[in-house]
Amino acid sequence: MSLLRGLLLENLGLKFVALLLSVLVYLNARTDRPVTMIVSFPVALQDVPDSVAIASAVPPPVQAEVRGTGKQVLRLRFAPPPLSISLAGVREGRYERSINAADLPVPAGLQVERLLGPRMVSLEIDRRARRRLPVAARLEWTQTTAARPVGSVLLEPGSVVVSGPAGAVAKLDSVGLATVRMDGRRDTLRARVGPHGLPERCTIE
Image (cartoon, rainbow, N blue to C red; front, side, top):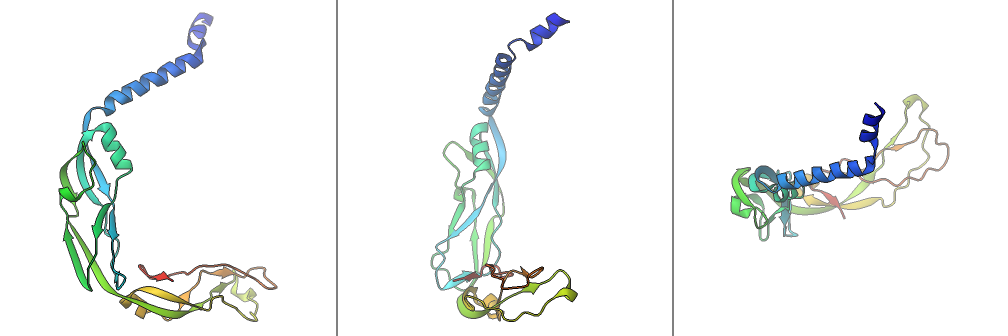
């Protein structure tokens, strides 16, 4: 029994290294074989004119079956380059652009076997609007019965310029801030907070 234990535990470090090297050699051989995997390419919108804004949601990634060695396809799958779409010169209205396999940013040595989709990028383009709007504070207590009167609220800045699709900006009457908790506060409170609930595609300048 002691002999068997000695054979198993003797030079344990070297045996572990040998096992690790054998696993690496096996994986290297496996990943050199040709494989086909599904890769998702995120869509990146570029060259948007300053006069317009995108009013629709971000397009979903474009998926395709890509063939190559296991190493190449795994590298592409975990770090796919974006599919860049230029919007230079677009105007208000609906924008559509078809996608085909040749548009995908596939590195040399890999091949697109089949484009799964979506095969069309559809966007709503609106006029870009800018409005100066007041900032609205939000104060909350855990128990409303324990709320104490607030002497004054000073907001710096008191207003901001909101930029975005004209339809979304027109619906705003103020820019709400993230909630400030007042529990246990009895004196002056200073808090740095950002906007809360700003419509998608709208930004503060």
